[in-house]
Structures are given as structure tokens and as C-alpha cells.
Length: 187
Image 1 (cartoon, rainbow, N blue to C red):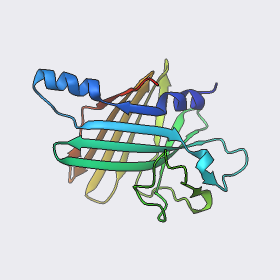
Image 2 (cartoon, one colour):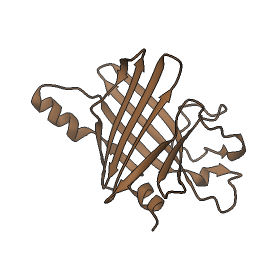
Image 3 (cartoon, rainbow, N blue to C red):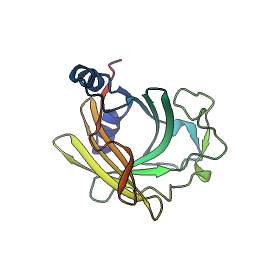
């Protein structure tokens, strides 16, 4: 199994931050939303994928709840290895002809046309460095002249630490510097 296959095995599955929230409730200081990620390879849902394609497209479904606030964010990511044998995350725009509600791993009718896919012009690809089975990456993207998005991730056996922060004119407008700690549900 190569580095990319090991990474994908750690990345894919269903994750939540229930244990993190339990500890926050017990301490009396709830900081993070209830969060869930469902990540799965979706190459089989993509028509016109080039022969011998060496990357993995992954649908990431993100679900967040805090009080009455609920948010669902699907993403399409491509994971590849670069020339230095590091994993690279490239974000793609969701296809315009597919609704957010339909862009799910469990949607058996979902078909994506590779020839119509567009790399996100906003997101700076993230490179993960691996050290003893722990993958860490950081990406800083300028969504506009005033808005900066910082994504930091650490992925290790059964856990993902995800910090997402939006800053407008240098001030945090949304997100968490302290990461959401996702743990993989056992099947």
C-alpha cells in the first residue's frame, strides 16, 4: 500500500466530535459545534475519468449544529501524490447541475462528468507532510481581498483534527483556531 492509499484509508469513513463535545459539556465550556464528516472515494461516480487515473476524488459531507444553527457543506476533493511523495488536496467546485442536497456519498444516482469539473479558484491546494503515520497540512486561501481562509488538518489513525478559520480584514469572523476533533466511528 502506498502513502496515498494509506492516507485515503485513514481519511475515509464517518467521523464525529461527540467525545470532544462530551468533555466540553463536562467542563462547562462548550466551544465547538456538534460536527460530523462523511468521507468516501467517489471515482466510481465520475464518468470520463482518464484511464490509469492515479488520484482519489472524495466527497466530504460536513454537518454542523450549534443551537438552532444547522449547516450542511458538501465538498469535492482530489487527493494525489506530488513529486516529493506528499499527499496534495485540491478542491473542486461542485458541479452546477447538482444540488448540495444531492451531492452525497449515499446518492446512488449521482453521476459527475470529469470533463465538466473545475478546480476551485479560491482554495489554495494543501500539502500534507507525513511523519510516523501522522499527516499534517495547512492551506491559506484568499477568498477575496479582505477574506482569508486558513485550513489546518492533522490526520492520524482514527482521528482528524480540523481547524477552519475565516478572517475578514484580519479579524476572525467564523471558525475555530482550536481544532474540531473528529473520531472515526467503528463499523
